Structure formats: structure tokens, C-alpha cells
Image (tube, rainbow, N blue to C red; front, top):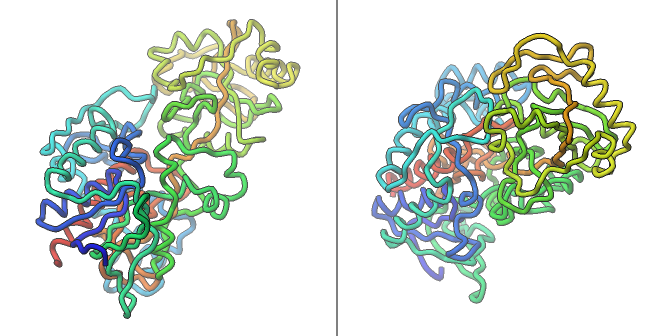
Amino acid sequence: MDQVFDVVVAGCGVAGLSAAVTAAERGLKVAILERASREDRGGQSRYTEAYLRMKALDEVTDDFETDLASNVGLYVDPDLTNEMAAGGRENWSHAARTLALSDPEVIGSFADHVAPTIKWLQGLGVKFDFLPTQFLTKTQPRLLPVGGGAALVDALAARAEQLGVTFFYHATARRLVLDARGTVIGLAAHQQGRGGLRLGGQVVLACGGFEGNSAMMSKYVGPRSVYLRPICKGAYFNRGEGIEMALDIGAAPCGDFGSYHAEPIDPRSGVSEPSVFIFPYGILVNKAGCRFVNEAPGTVDAWYERITRRIYEQEEGISYVILDQRVKEVPNYRLAIRSDQPAVEADSIEGLATKLGIAPEALRVTVAAYNAACPTSGAYDPLNLDDRATQGLVPPKSNWSQPIDRGPFMAYPIISANVFTFGGLKVSPVGQVLDTDGQPMANLYAAGEVIGMYYTNYTGATSVLKGLVFGRLAANNIADVT
């Protein structure tokens, strides 16, 4: 080995930094690998607003565990889920131990350690508040760190440096180093300007999903993934090496490898997370000028991912939200549009269609049919579900249905961004990676996106918490057994 540490962490986002700082605070010698420079460190964590699914500083939301549990798999054998709910994992059958989903003990451990993690971050100087979000309608509160993910990264990185953590910048983890018995004893990496690097120690994989790896995206998500793009520039660093190197030595997969967290963005914009959440107040049409989805089945925070997936299914993975001047009457409507690009505008629907490359007559017919189906009674309430539903229209629109008839007319193009991938590794309640027989793999841990947890639909505002919590769980467990 070139150097030996107690803990080697791959990844410098909030998951990796939480692991590194916690281990160093426990008196361990720690190294952390960062693919980027010191100035750009933090990966995707630096760009996120870091929504946290909490109703208070010391409490997660009431549905935290139930919503996570509802999104861990489809059509799971009820006998196996009942088995897991009935007793400890030491009594589970092989089939139950090896299901590719996060079991109740993992979800319970996650929920139990959120509040202590936030308190720990407060001790590092991070401030939290219930700040305005981009969701004009929502079902759950969202706590935010003041300054977003960048504030988390900066506070954690500063503490790591203060504690003497060794940073290897421009360094990419390549493979796990094993002893003669196949036990993990370190990590092999490549550092720009230095070449190969072998670091000894227990390993925490915290280097993200594979949204930045086009080959893995095509392999797992499918060929239509060419119509996706990562949500921010930091996500291009997430290339799945941590997941692959663990699978290569017998780690168990977990989560939905064929899916990802979807968010609607303006493809014209190059800013971080140029989201467009204004579509419940208009209609969504595809390149043929046709509606294809209920734009407002419920609050936007609860439904935007499922609607964005329908956008991804359209020709070339793109749609357009059609709006009129009524949208400007929605209080704080600009919060729902993070794009730095202006709306496409025209004085007529046909003129708007021409600018969008849509057949003018097709869009005119679609808008006319929608307008005719809008209700003529019932109070319009843009910030709450108002049940102003269309009548006789397929697909329907369940809320906020008002005619689009006040020009100039506006549109934003929308594609699906890939915020992060769902497939990853299966872990124990303390973040230790499990093998394909459901047994803990010595000296190997995971945190953040590397852990597979979600299926089909993301449990909102839990991903940053997942990184923070499991980074600390992994490091504390290493310290306890070292």
C-alpha cells in the first residue's frame, strides 16, 4: 500500500464528508478521494438546495418511514415482507435477507438517526430554516440548510481539514483491494499527475450513482436515456464506479436500476437545476401538439416526478407547457420557474405553435378542446387543491383548470432531468454493504446514492438525509469495531 489509513472514503459530497468527519472525530486516521478540484469539491451536493423531509429540527415528517417503505419495491412476496416485519434479521430466511429492497430495519435506522444528525450539523455551524421552496403547492414541509447543499459541503469540508483528514483531489476510485481471502483491505485509485494509488483501510463508498455514465445509463435505464441529462454539472462526476466495484466482488444490488429521480427542467438553460414547476396552471403538449397527461392530479411536490416520467415517454423526450397571462396572477409564480431563459411568446396560439415547431392547427385544436372542457363554476384557488376539473376531456385535468385565452401566450420546453439513479448496493442498518447471501462484507460500507433504496417514485426530500445519516452510521460503526 502507498499509504495506510483507518478509513478510506470515496466521494466528497455530503455522504463522504459526513463519514470522514465522523470518523476523524472518533480519532481515526481518514483519507477522502475527490474526483474534482478543491474549489469544485462536493459533487452534486454542492448544487442541491438540500430539501429535508422534516416537520421540525428534531422530527421527520409523520409519513417518513411509511412513504419510504411504499417505494422500496413492486409486487413483493407478502410472505417475505411479513417475515421481515415479524422478527430480527438473524431469523430471516435466505430469500428475505437477499431481497433487493431496503428492509424495515434499514428504514427504521435511517429515520431514527435523522434528528441526531441535524443536531450534529448545527454544532458545526450549519443553520436550518423552513424557507420558501419552488413548490407552490405541497403536502409536506421541507426543512432546508441556509445556503443549501453548498453550506453543508463547506461546513463539513472545513471541519475535515481542521481534524487533519487527508484529501486526495483529482482522484478517482478504480477498484477495491482484497487480501488472499477476498476481504476488502483498501482502495485502488488513479490520481491525475500521479498515476496509480493504493490506500489501505476500511472503505466507505460514497461516490454517487451513475447518472454521469452514459454506458451504465444505457445498460440499466435503456436507450431512451439519451433524452435525459443530469440535473447539474456536479452530477457528471457520478459515474457509478463505487457501485460496480462492489458488485464485482459479490455485493448485493438494491433499488431500481432501471429508474432514476426525474425532475422537469428547461433544456435551453445551463444553470444548476433549471426546473419548471409551473405546468399545473397550463397544459402540457408533446411535439404533435397533443395533451398526454393530467397536469394537476394533486399538489405539485407529490406529483411532479410521475408527470415528468410521462414527459420522458414522449417523442424525443420533450414537451411544452402552454400558458397565458393568467399565470401571472398566481402568487409568487416565478418561484416555480428556475430557468434563466425567457418564455417563448406569441400573440396567438398558432403563432406560438410555429415558434415551438408544432403544427399550428394541431395546437389550436388541443387548446380549444381544453378551453371548452374547463368548468364555469367553483372557486379558483391557485395555492390549494381546488377541484376545478375539466369535464369530458381525456386525459382530464383535476385542478386549476382555467381557459387559456388571454394573450400573449407563453410556453416553456420541458425535458426530464436525471437527478440521481435509484439502483445501488444493499446495506445493513449501519451502512455496511451486504453480499449476495445477505451477509455483511467486512471493511466495506456505503452512504448516499451508492445505497439503492427507491423504486419507481422518489420519496421526496430524503436523498440528502440518506447521505448525511448513513455516512455517520458507517463511520461510527467502523470506530466501534476498530
